[in-house]
Amino acid sequence: MLMNLFCTPVRRLGSLLVWLWMLLATSSSLAQFRVEVTGVGLTQLPVLVAPFKGEAQAGQKMSQIVQADLARSGQFNPLPAESLALDEMSRPDWLALRPLSAEALVAGSVTRLANGRYDVRARLWDAVKRQEKSDFRDNVTAADLRLSAHRVSDWVYQQLTGTPGVFTSRISYVTKSSGRYNLWIADSDGEGARSALSSPEPIISPSWSPAGTQLAYVSFESRKPVVYVHELASGQRRVVANFKGSNSAPAWAPDGRSIVATLSRDGGSQLYRVSLHGGEPQRLTSGNINTEPAFSPDGNTLYFVSDRGGNPQIYKMPAQGGPADRVTFSGNYNISPAISSDGRWLAYVSRLPGGFRLHLMELSTGQVTALTDTNADERPSFAANSRLLVYATQQGGEALMTTTLDGRIKARLAVQGGDIREPHWGPVRP
Amino acid sequence: MKKHFWSLLMVSAVLAGCASGVKLDDVPVEDKSATSVGSGQGVAIQGIGVAQGSAQTAVASVAASQVSAGQGPAGIAHVVFFDYDSFVLRPEARPVIASHAQFLQTNKQRKANLEGHTDDRGGREYNLALGQKRADAVRQALSLLGVPESQLEAVSFGKEKPLATGSSDIDQAQNRRVEIRY
Image (cartoon, rainbow over all chains, first blue to last red; front, side):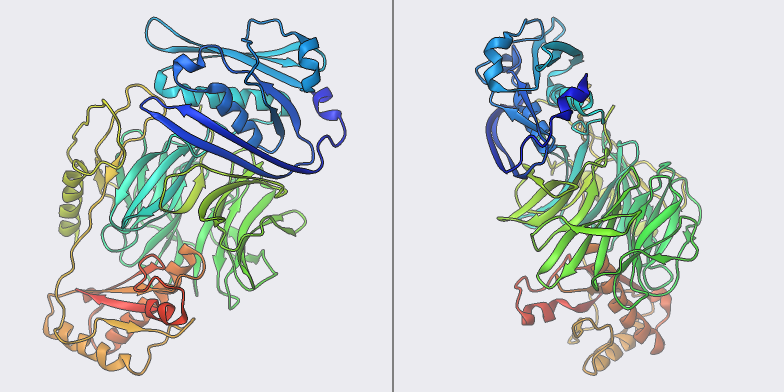
């Protein structure tokens, strides 16, 4: 039973520093990447992920992708397993494995089929009970082997924690390099990034559609901020808000049929609901600055930033507009709200004397925790399972970081070079 | 305006072909022409689809291009600066604004974009809203001098386009500004 795996009391308390250097063959070339996980974990399940049989020939080190995913989650401690020669059909030699003190074992294979596709199989064992626990099977093109490895991670995560994994989700972010802006779409580990848009003018505020097929963002390519919706697979995009003045801060309604954006068409910066099927935008706020909308997962409440009290604070109001309640009270500059998909948490950036830091509020109690000790944190967003956050910061250079909600486990994502900003974590892919 | 925007999009579509953002080996580049959808102000642009076979990880790459600025009144400053955390025009900005008002009233066919900017402290979207306040202040000043709103558009770049990239107070003061562009 999986509870066995988790009932052991505080398993790993103390400093943990895992550096996994990995050589990863991509479909086109060999690319070196590094996964860096730092922090102090409370309970981390020791897990063995054996090299998948055939992964070297397939050109994707499936097992290393899975190990790195599990380490980043903060809930696992992947043990060194390079020397294990196992696949999903093996009968593990439990006596030989016992000194490794693993509580779970994953082994599998990657086989190229006659049609050029790959058959990916894996098996998960409870290493304490020495029992098979679950089997995994996938069939993908060579280009989707990374995706398949992330599916293995999601399966392992779900089996061992009971919570859906988010490793198959994608993260978008923006870089500025040599005067050019690029909007990137990367795997949840930052790898496999592809440019969705390249522009000589700034791109900000990318926001995933609920289905994960489109991004809304603000592009300045016509010398003003205009909101676009961009379909990733085809590259087709359309202007959804180009009213007189500035158009910015798009947030998708959970039903994917409209966005709320900040428009200055009537002066100032106000929130409007803009249907994706046309029609006149519906104004939701008045007075002062109102911007950075973020929906509650049920779509009934809008969180946003307003300076109505004299400095920027986070407020909430009914999604159709109406009286607003102030949500943040400590500090005089609180911006960039993000709500977890389980509705429990508000992440935001607060200005302190030292700089701008990521904070987390439990909405039911109002209790606030600072999650970082960095000073230039920007634009947090939650993973779909509400267990991790991604944000941009300065930490030995510009970086995209993920953190667990207790702030204990942080990982630097491998990203494209240049100034890095504006991350947004997308939904899980089917 | 709409016509201008269309031509921009056409140019974008053409330029996209020569500036693909990602290198993707052995993949044919499909060229597609601009298409429209009839949804309010919405304009559709078909980017350059870079097909990835049937891969579920496919992301098509699109390149955007920029517009060039026209000429405004000669010999007149095109930038006015603001104090820290302020959206009030300084006294020395008044004659500059007046000259632009005169130019716009003499040249009724010309339009001015008032582009608000901030220093680099704080969030991108919140700074966009602060820059908008500065742009709106210049728009209101021009409007009070008799320039019709139809000749004016106040927009913001927030902290995205600094004049000075240093972190000193002097650099930051350079960045708190409104640029008047034609």
